[in-house]
Amino acid sequence: MQNKKQYIPYGKQYIDECDIEELISVLRSDWITQGPKIEEFEKNFAEYAGADYAVACANGTAALHLVCLANDIKTGDIVLSSPISFAASMNCALYCGAKPAFADIDANTKCISPDAIEKALSNINDKRNCFPKMIIPVHYCGYPCDMDKIYELAKNIGAIVVEDACHALGAFYKDKNGNAVKIGSCHHSDAAVFSFHPVKHITTGEGGMITTNNKNLYDKMIHFRSHGITKRQTEFTYASFDKAECGMWYYEMQNLGFNYRITDIQCALGISQLKKLPEFLEKRRNIVQLYHNSFRNIDSIDYIKEADTVKSAWHIYPINLKGRLKSKRKKIFEFLRKKQIGVNVHYIPIHLQPYYRKNFGFRKGDFPISENFYDTTITLPLFPSMTEEEVSKVITSVLKVVEIF
Image 1: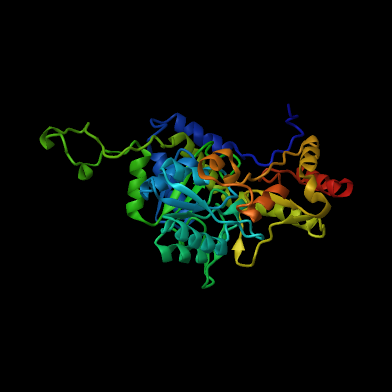
Image 2: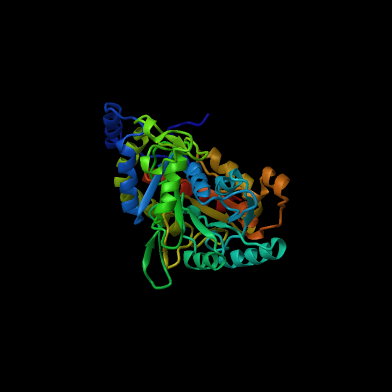
C-alpha cells in the first residue's frame, strides 16, 4: 500500500470549501437529481466553451455514446479515430454496431495526423467502397488536433466530426485565418465531448458534457440521455392512445435510450469547479514550464512542444525515452514508482487490445508511430495542487534516471 503522505499520483482532483458548500446547499434543497442545477451547469459550460448548446451526462463514455446515437451510427457504418486514446474513444462506435478504423498519430503532437487520415480514407474506400461516417479526433494530453485540415477532409466525404476533448478543456488553436478557436466551440466539428473524471481539469466525481451548435443534434442527445422518453406534448405521437385521455402524467418512449443522466449534486460541484478553471489551467501550465526547463537539454528525454498556433490544456505530461533509455522503460517506470512517484502510461494503443485484435483483425505494426510512442512513453504527475516540493521531487528523480540508467 502506498504511503499517502509521500506518494505523488499522476493526477488528482482539487476540492475546496467552496465546492463543499455548493454540494451541501444542493443536499439541503428539494432537488438532488433532475433539477435546476443541471441546466445551470449546461448553460455555464456552453458559455465558457463558446457553443450554443451543452448536454451534461453521466460520464465521458456516455457522452461519446450519446453523440453516436444522436448521429444514427449503426451496424455497417465505419468510425475512424486515433489509436492513442482510452478505449472509450472507439468503444462508443462499437456500442452502435459500427466498425472501427484508425489513422496513425503525428510524431510531434501525438494527435491523429491529417495526412494519415487522408491515407486511411483512401484505403477504406478502396477496400469497402465507402467512407467513414464519423471521425473522432482526440486532443491528446490537451494538445489541439489540426482541426482545419481534419474538418475539411471530413466534409469532403460527408463525415461527421466529433472532437474527443476529454483532455482539452481550456485549450485553444489558431485556424487558417489566424483566429483563436476554443476547444468546445465546435468551430470545426459537429460536437465536442468532455469528461469530468477526478484527474481531468474540473471534476464532478464522474460526469461528462457534449457541446454542439446543432439544435437538432442537441434535442436528440437530450432525448437519448433519458431512456428515449419525451414528456413534451408537441412531440407526442399518440400512436396508441386517445389524445383526449392523455393527462399530465403522460409520456412516450419513442426510441431505445439510456439512463445517462447526471445529478444536481454533481452539477453543483461542476458549476463551482468551472469558476476555478482559469486558475487550474495556469497552475498546470506553470508546472509544465518547469518540466520543460528541466528536460530541454537532455537528449534521452523528449516531450511534446507547443507550436505557435496552439495553447494546450496540459491534462497529462508524457515524456518519451530516447537513445540508451529507450529499451529501459519498465525498469525506469518501476524505479520512479519506488520513489513514490505515480507515473503511468497513456495509452496502450486501442487497436492492440485483445478485443480489437480478435474481432477486427488488427495487429502489431498496423500503426507504427502510435506503437513506438506507446513503447517509449511514461506520464509524469501533473495536477493543480502539486506543491513545489512535489514538482522538484519528480524533476530530481527523472534526472536521476538519466544519470544511473
